[in-house]
Length: 260
Image 1: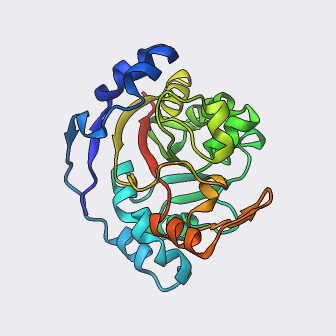
Image 2: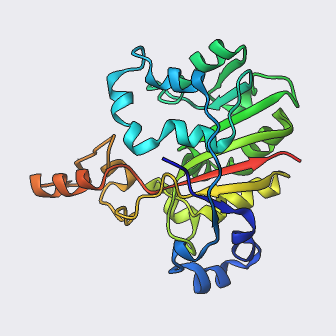
Image 3: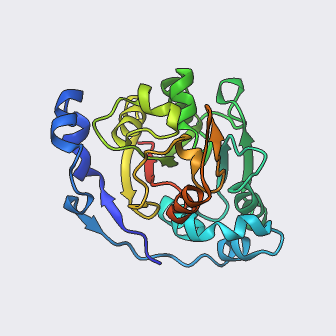
């Protein structure tokens, strides 16, 4: 599958506009209105091997249909021999099970960082590739989005990439209100990266899911893979559970930022 990439210029008006204008102009803007280009995928046998490896947990491989690991990492620009930093890989380690063996096989380096404020695990200006996946809503709730992005920019070498995968809310909404559901607006993430001095290099709809309307009783965790089914006095019926399962995983932004 080829990733569809959206030029950075397509969001320039959105990013520059005040919040009120964003609400009026973009809350219902069709994604198809944005200009697109389709890049050629560069074959990476080592990456293909890491993804296909039998050492990856079966549950991880079952989610490839939703998370598109080869296409996403290729879009983000991962290269052999890279110094890779993954932010908060978690106990499940979904991306880690790909990135760590890939780095080992290509002469690169993989570093897991649970809390950026406690150290980025690499010398300043030496990281080729930093991945921040599905965590920005937590940072928004904790008030550490700007400080974390500043640390990412400091750790990256010139030309280095910050790769972002994040549950995406509709535009025009307040991240302070949506973050508790697991979703944040795409423009919120782009503006945070830009404040840190990073440049939006490209964006993709590769991990978009139009079936996800972002409105679920237990936030994004209602959907796969978490599948929360009860809380706050409510329990999903079997029919409701089946309906949410049919959605698949969340609608997500896929962004590539670069350090000038």
